[in-house]
Length: 216
Image (tube, rainbow, N blue to C red):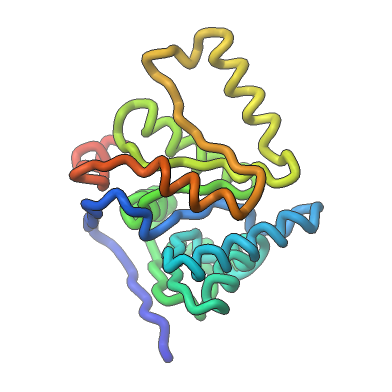
């Protein structure tokens, strides 16, 4: 069956009005990393998503942790939306078997659509791109732009340096009490979805207002 491919040139908007987690955006590396547990965790989480009827939204790649989580979801009958800018479709090798493939004009549109299509965000191990995507969602949350849960999957302590840096920022008053960053943490894959569901805030509008998206 052919995969629907959507090439976007204009700004659309979608929204969800329920607090239930129906889709999760996963940020992770386009490589496997040096620790085999990273790949194991990505595969296990993909299965968890499919088994619980939760759709995956991710960067569209076919390799590394990105490919592992997406293929695991698909292998277990789940739904996957891949969102990738055209210039990366060859470099990261877009996964052709996804349920829906969206090709964007640039990184900004990619990240905006990943935000709009998702009810929560999970960061598995990854590199600078993963870190940038995670921190962007933390920043938007801190500024009151959304209330969607954000979770760091601290597989084998991968994210400990970042967690320590965040604690240091609080201790030195750069993260002020009135601008708290509510980030969840899970050491085990089995804990990720329960923590996201428990943290899902009942809100009437989960999508970023168009005027905010334009400014960001």
